[in-house]
Length: 152
Image: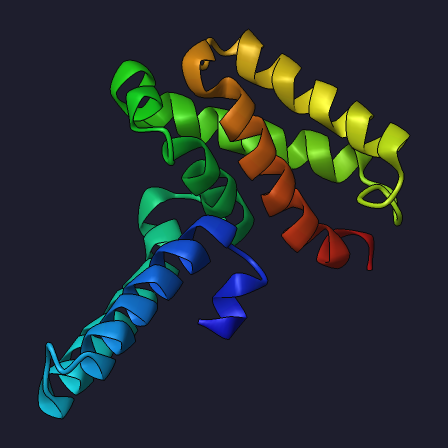
């Protein structure tokens, strides 16, 4: 899970919550040691399957990370469909990679420029406005996680 945290913030959050819930249930004696081990094995299988998902969807690992950031809003998935979200994820990746600077996550003016870039792309493709602000924040967190490998 630690390796995934460097590439996909949405998956990391989802898997961490599952792990914490299993451990909490174990500590309150709601489940036995055997049951917690079974849950951990299931979690490991899901992490492994998540790595394969990008190839199955025809997306790179970076693109699938942005796709997950956009698909976190279920109304967007229902309204737009997978193909539109894949297209947006690809465009976000290309645009953000082309505009990232070494210190963009620390300089407010650079962060603002990236925020505007993301908002324009989402608006252009008709991303549902009800959750657009949350999507922008998630996309920027995802960009922060990936940008170290882009400028290296």
